[in-house]
Each structure stands twice: as C-alpha cells, then as structure tokens.
Length: 380
View 1 (cartoon, rainbow, N blue to C red):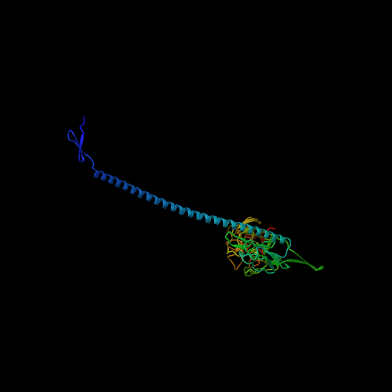
View 2 (cartoon, rainbow, N blue to C red):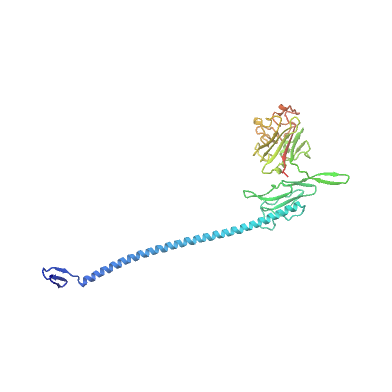
C-alpha cells in the first residue's frame, strides 16, 4: 500500500521516503496564464497584420483591374464610334456616287439626244467642288456644265463651222482620280475646236458640213521640199492641208495618246521603196529628251529588205528628239539621224541602205525624198 503524501507548503511529501514534489503556486499559475495570453496576443497581431497586408494587395489589384477595364471600355466605345462614323460616311459616299453616276448617265443621254444646254455634274454650290481645277477657255467653243471635282462631267460644244478635236469623239470630258491622289481632266485639257471641211453647192448655195472618222491622222509629210527645221521645233504649223507636199502638225501628237501609249506609222511612199513600220511607244517624241524613247514596241514592218529597219546600230527604235537639232527635229535611231523627221534638206536619211538595195536616187546626198508620219486615232 502506497503511503499517503502530506503537503507541506507548496511541496507534497510522501510518508515513507520523504520524496518531495513541487506544486505550482497561484503566482506560478498567474505567470503561466500571462505567458499564454502574451503568446496568443502576439500570434493574433501577426495574423492580423498579415491579413491586412493581403487585403491591401487585393484592393490594389482590384483597382488596377478596374482601371484597365475602364480603359478597354473607353477604347471600345471610341472604336464603335469611329465605325459608326465610317458607316455613315460610306453610306453618304455610296449615295453620292449613285447620284453622280445617274447624273452622268443623264448628261450623256442628253448629248446623244442632241441637247444643246447642260446643267452639268455636280451642283456648283457644292462646298466640296474643286478637284481638277477650272478647264481653260476653248477657242471657237465652250465647255458646257460647271463641275470641277472628281466625277464631274463636262461637254465640249463647238461654234458653227468648227468641230471637236478631242480624245473623246463625243466631246464628253470627265474629272477623274489617279492612283497618286491627284485629279485631272480625262483629256488632259487638250480638247479643241477646229475648222470643219465644208462643201458648198453653188446651185442651191447650201453648205453641207461632214465629219469623217479617220483611223490614222497625218501629222507630217516631206516630199521633194525643204522643211524649216527651226519652225518645226518651235511647233509652228507648216502647210494648209494634209494634201500639201510640205506639211507639219507635229504639236497635235499629244492629243492622240490612248491607253497610255501612242501608235505611229512611218511611211516612205516612193514606189521603189514602199517601206512602212508601225509601232507604239509611251513617250511623246515632241516633248521627250533627245534620243530617249519609252516602251518602244514594234507592231508590223513592211520593207523590201529585212534589214532595212533592223540593220545593226542603225536599226529603228522609235521616234525621239534628235541629238543633231541643227539638222533635223526627230530621228528614229540612237547613234545618228536616220529615219529623220523635220530634216532641213530635200533629200534626207530615211531607211539605211535602202538606196543600195532598191537603187532609189534623190536629188541630193541621201536616199529619201519623201516621208510621212501618221498617228493612230481613237477607235470608234
């Protein structure tokens, strides 16, 4: 049997061997309680601080997200607004284009119906008018209508006794846009009114005016005559009609550029020669640099000998201003001045070596005494 323990103060003492066990006092318990309370408070404070820091981070993240969302919403709103403006502008442009097309069609129909008065397109009160600029005054004629911005249609009407000399046989001129953003008149402001051919019958004193379409237009002829090279270079007309032996209208070449190119025919009509070459080029020989030809393309050749137009360094390669301006105006090869146009003598260098092959002789040093230059008209 275990002997009972006797408490002595804060110590229990067994009844046999005097073993003593320490027993906590109330002060000890109070200290222990305080330590526990301090530990709990310290742990609770750190947890609270950590929690507050996490809350602050979450609040900041939420604010940043809200700002980004607001910025996205603003950008989306602006984009939608721009899209709406674009749709509105597109609808207006489509409506305007439709009205312009209808106006143009009505004007063309009026021309074909023989109308003599035109209101033109677009309305001159349009604040956006002004793209191609005012068309210059036309001698012996007037450009009906009043529009000047892109899409405008004007009609050239000539006075009695004059007819149109225009890239458009109907006289219709439009203000068109280019890829580079510039607007220009479809005929390059080159439409003119020229005197018509009239035939008068004395029996009835009735004047009948006829205009005949010509697929080729003669712009130069030199047949057994001297040409004033300087006058030709200055653009002065020579001769009265295209039946004259000495005839030049080289300045009119600029009116016959179609599909971005000129098509020419160079003829040597002498029966012993009968050489002829047809070609196209994009450069105007009367305005090009000396010996510069752009985009030469041979179409057909008629020659007594195959090398007449293609002989070595003197082969024909299109017309340009000559590098021998005191002798001739234009030439067709790049080293000398064969195939001369505007030569200042009765005989001149035409097709190289043709006189050797065909034994053609002129009253002079050169092989050619007769040459013609034609330019192709717009197809009907």
